[in-house]
Image (cartoon, rainbow, N blue to C red; front, side, top):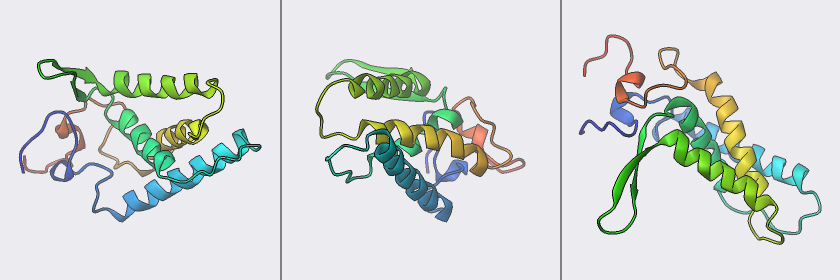
Length: 150
């Protein structure tokens, strides 16, 4: 598997990998918490909360805590490709969720997005490997266990 500078992967021993049972549990807990937060924040809503957006938001929250300096590649048209730190991209996304709360009637569970991200940010500190620092560099070496081969 090739070495990538912009995102953690299974080879880098990231705290949450697709093959890890903890990842599935983390995902489900973030989704359930996001749904509960949405229900409490907007109890009069008649919009059904169906989907995975709260759980995905939880994964994004974990990512921003673990890898805020990781580069996110943004493709804006055929010739404009640039890198932006994860904290800026996800911070803007989070801000947009808050702004959209006041947007009137919507079929989007904005509180589930906000709640999922906050829950993911809060819970990842409980699950991360001891050798992985929070708010790290975003480089795969950050998640490599001590003494592991490159």
